[in-house]
Length: 383
Image 1 (cartoon, helix red, strand yellow):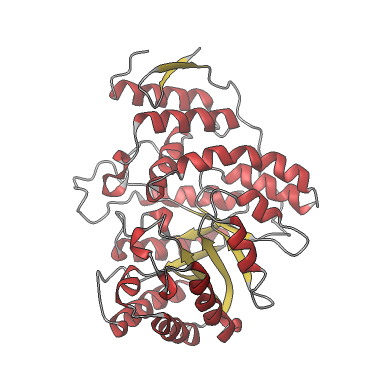
Image 2 (tube, one colour; image 1 turned 45 degrees about the vertical axis):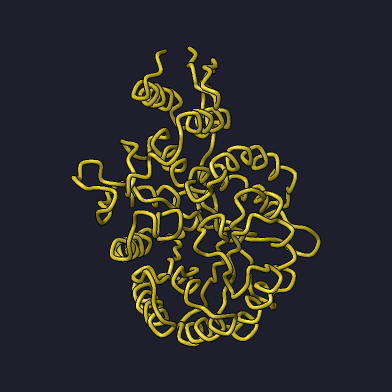
């Protein structure tokens, strides 16, 4: 059987779907790397809401997907950018997500870290921003999860220079009860974060970021870097204090960054490990044996898919992530909170399907093909 898929120019091309999925199984916990998947949320498709309404979440399907990730040994990075923080999921919804996921993690023995931000605010003074961070930090710590201090749109707008970042982050790190992960999310993921750490000059911003860490190394478990610049991440991780980890958030260059070099390596906290979960886990277990070549042979072929999903405008990568979860059978529908399923084009979906199917990511290729055909029919593509 073949399927006709639309290309970027509107032409239809014939594709032959894969007959069998890649054979992947669960296995032992990872030993050489700490790996988190930033997980998406599943919308409630029956809720009568608009894109401006508070998110209506299908909690059963959302938690089931987290159990899927945990079953493969991955940690879950919860209530992060992949979960549509600030793009459909507000703080009230994120707080509920954190509480539910942390309780589920405790019940099944899964590792979890949760995003702490300031999305209660659209704008505010440094004092108000600090209080917003404190409120969210308290929710995460009370849930028993590790905290990830995320970049703040409100702080990016209000800060007059590096000193505001040093003051607010210093205060939060002194207050945190356990070591946290600091997250540097670049403007390609969120344009409102341009100039974070007090400068649009990335060298100057890096110096401020490192100053925050060096002042409180005992309170920083690691940093997540999402700048899509492999060399900058390598240079940064080589400057980290002893014991502070680098978690790559580079969805373009993750195989080489995780594999590392003679001077070190990155751990991982990645949105692309949502659709790649089982395959990524298999690759890391190969790396655990010291087989870097085998690790790269498994993970390198996934980069084309990742770069496709995260192509500009990068912030809409979540749409492709949820689309693949639907095709893979992890949810019964292709609906997103905030109506974000409309954020990518039909040719984009077609290419994502083709690449993911070619990698063997779909547990049931026939189901994925049937759902792709349904989407094509909705868009008026005759087969």
